[in-house]
Length: 93
Image (cartoon, rainbow, N blue to C red; front, side, top):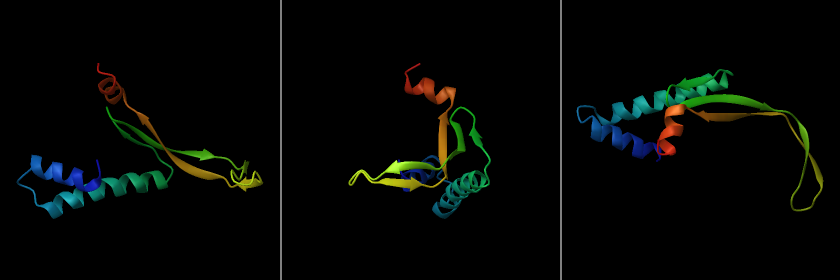
């Protein structure tokens, strides 16, 4: 599902809302998640899962084309851990 499909589904389920309002709501939710994670904090949506930021240290990598060693800098990456409800629904429980 992409953002526009999410907006359309929410509009279908809530016909009393305008499209621009639904788009603003969805954008606000995503922006808050991004801003919170950018600040290094964790975002937990009960039953769905938790978004957090993990730190990957610097390391020596390898260029797959040439085999030449390459220095890979330290970086922060997003991480998602599923909640129990989501895991159970995916596994048919």
